[in-house]
Image (tube, rainbow, N blue to C red):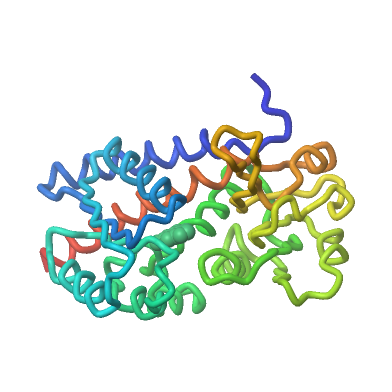
Length: 299
Ligand code: GUN
């Protein structure tokens, strides 16, 4: 079946999972079971779904995972203590604290408490700094890492291209820019970050070879903002109330897919584009963490 101009995130994620699986098998043959802890605070419905998907993915790959669910009222100090316990536990290779956290907890503090060696999210300042400096050996955040892998594996030429990133968040926009402007193969792009205070975003979008939308506004990117032939990556997951829908809401991306697909050269579907890649990169980072810790243990 021809997918036309669609970038098939599910198929590409499967490729990455197959590679990760071989590494899991090798680790296990050496007596190491890669192991991952999820910490979820409160009952944010989207976080429950995301953590559930990550758990299932880990299980399929033979990665041991455990989820700790804490009540919404959990004190920041208690959460920091728990993270520290897992930092000190040699049988745990990766720690993920699902965002968003309740407003009384300082997310930055929590992400900074995770040992950089176990920070498979790539949110610790040490890993963020390594990415910024182009240093090897750190962890790259999963969503922008997944978008980069999607571009590479669907033969989108990144080098020398003009990339517009919509959104300047720490989880997607900023690390995405850092990845794409590295002086490296598959990077070397000219990157512009647009955000809520950017004047005339459409003007930047129209000159872009690649648009990466992570702005959190449903169907923000319209056909008239897209240069014909451009590559469009939709990172957005927006819950929009819809009483006619069984669940009472619908999930919409940041791209008006129906309008944009005919104009785009290549485009990610949503769902089925970036989402599966985020999980694939998380599993890959977990295995990388286990490999690095196993080597350090032997030293
Ligand atoms: N919330 C939304 N995306 C992410 C992510 O990549 N990692 C964590 N920990 N929380 C998230």
